[in-house]
Image (cartoon, rainbow, N blue to C red; front, side, top):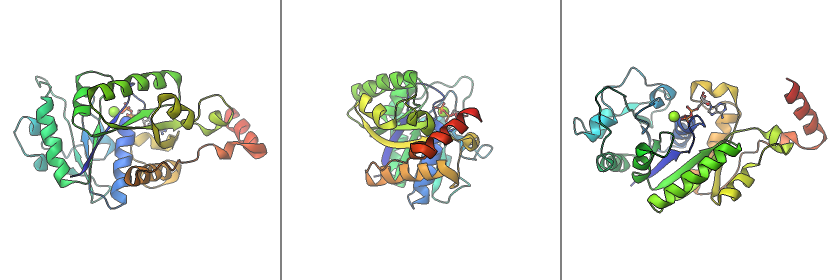
Length: 259
Ligand SMILES: Nc1ncnc2c1ncn2[C@@H]1O[C@H](COP(=O)(O)OP(=O)(O)O)[C@@H](O)[C@H]1O
Ligand SMILES: [Mg+2]
């Protein structure tokens, strides 16, 4: 059976969809069969992040309501032959699907793939509970700001209340220059405050705006380290900070603050 991992956070806009798409691609690049499921039924955009918009025939609603089998709704991502997406389409007059029905769909996918990644909606409402109930593991995406950390703390407690779950954090949009200057917490400090394991650190990167970083640049390397950690259950951390420490690091920090 494949591993079912929900990608969640308290806040919206911290990078859940970005992490889902890029982690899915990085795992597929390691030879794993991966499906990314758009569990955000209100503000669905995983299809755009994974380059399959305009190719959708059926979606998660159709599978959950028995109009098609999970296999029929899958769309292969153009980025990798091992990578598939189960999209969600928001439409008028559509009722939220039952948790049990979605769990059955995710269960079917678990028998076809090595990894099922669920992109979770923001907040702690019905969609969040449903996505958590369908998964066995959770990655909580956090930005290195106090408000995001506080939301993540609530989210982690709710995950544990819902079910025993293997929870890790991914610190996204990390600014090594600010961490080295002591202006924000380091990823290790964030994980120890939240009392969960640190699974990944992804740097802030302007080039990521279109969704996938596709194997190039610092972000792609950070996602590949994250995929290795998920696969091998280890905690190797992508280093965003050391370039900004020491004498030359302090010059780089100064330059970054004025550019
Ligand atoms: N590491 C990053 N560096 C720069 N921008 C990022 C990074 N991660 C996400 N973003 C941007 O942040 C915005 C929100 O990301 P998204 O993945 O849609 O968040 P969520 O799914 O949590 O609402 C998007 O414009 C995305 O491109
Ligand atoms: Mg999203």
